[in-house]
Amino acid sequence: MTKQLMKPCVLAEDIMSTQTSTLLPVTPIPQAISELLKQHQSEMPIVNGTGEYCGIFSESCCMRILETLACMQNNPT
Image (cartoon, rainbow, N blue to C red; front, side):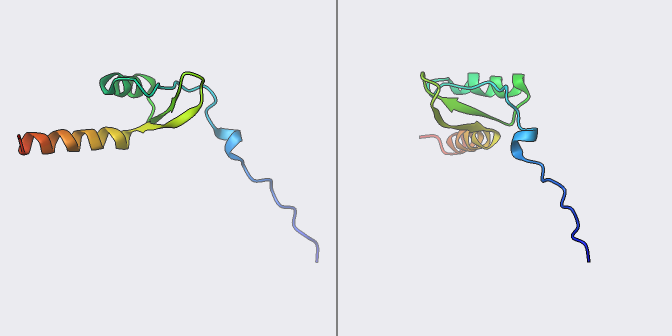
């Protein structure tokens, strides 16, 4: 019996985006949302002034913001 040749697996680096916009930790939320929409991205990395990764701002973050605002509107203090 002969061994079947295995096809090489596609790697993440083969399909990843290499040019993406980033946000700073001090980016105002409305601006961060605007950047997501303008860049047609579902998430953007947050980096500090030296380019070091700090986190991700994503559509999920936007949903949490909406949830918070809705709760604040329903339960004014």
